[in-house]
Length: 154
Image 1: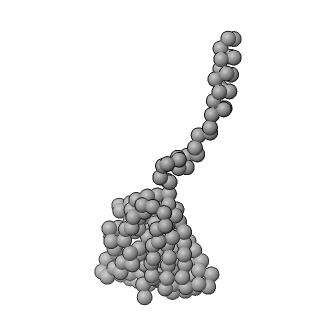
Image 2: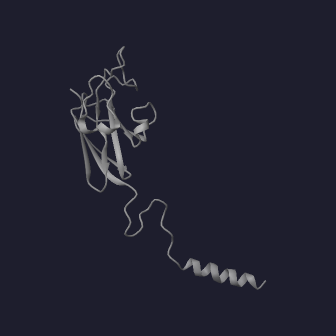
Image 3: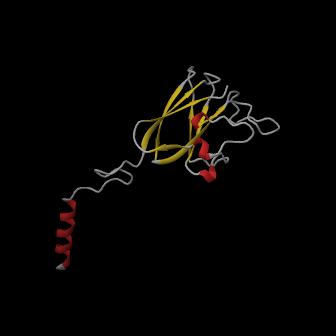
């Protein structure tokens, strides 16, 4: 029974200490876990059709169906230019964009597998005979204020 008051004393001393930081929250003096990156998309083919931004962080999964790190879908609401803020971890990233101009929830392609709907990549890479590589499309997130400008292919 003598141990119980000792445990209560210890527990009450812990309550007086500062609460631990939330997981993922930056510690004072530490780099934030993510940075806000603004993706500016211009030359939209349609001011109404959904734009899909697929973000990749791993070269091995770049452009593989369903293997993006995450996807953001934006309706232009009558605009021909979008500004999309996203939170990205520091490191190398690449973005692949598509616009679903016929609203069938997929990227339409011809018999050769070439997209027939608008598409674009970070660094404004314009592939000719094959899809671009992660290396060609990558950009680095190293601090706040990063802006990635992408124009849809004409």
